[in-house]
Length: 281
Image 1: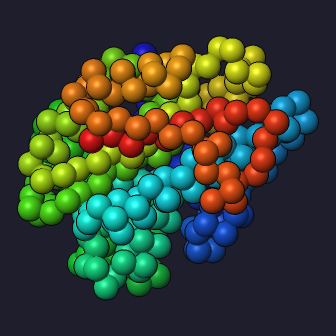
Image 2 (image 1 turned 60 degrees about the vertical axis):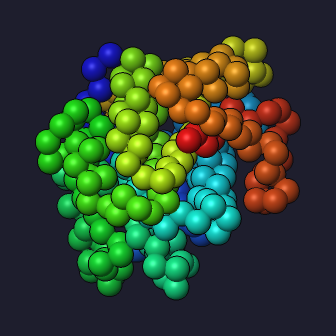
């Protein structure tokens, strides 16, 4: 499957608008492109919500809050002092975490394709958020070497510091062969650090899940907006764990948002969540 990554930035603006709607991002992260995409998708979202009692927005907020929670724990309990967020899009995480952990000297590097990286740099600069500890770099996960590669990006960090690498809204745009190459590259390139954990979300192919039959609607909507396929991966939590271990991760925890509903004030659903968040080392 060939993925045209240039179109994924549309979803970045859309999710940026979602974060603003839910108080997860400063208002400056709201863009006209994101707002218009949200309005365009509203009829489809309403249809999905009427059928299953939730919509794409529901699961976006679930994954975002859970990723934030796990990154917070990595910093406060595991001593992580460097964070790299690849395919950062309009994520507010770099701003919020850089401000929250300024006293710890947290270094936060956001990375994306050239166009999105330029837009993010402009946003951060205009609002006084860019700093020596909070930067934006260019990175393309499909580039094996050179100035846009993951290895080149990680070379800019301190190899003596505990590090976290995070991706959100990326995995399900690619087939498993591409993901295995990317994940294996992560384990190889992050071996330079004393410890590195990878945080990401994945929408599984849970065929016995009550809403599985309706995921084609979501896949169709995402495909319409981004001009890309959006495949589901793995049929169980155990299969997700095995898939990451195949890429040489030693410790893999598959987190279910259901286990965090009260702690993170996630909305109650009449069925199990359809998204998983993976913590791999």
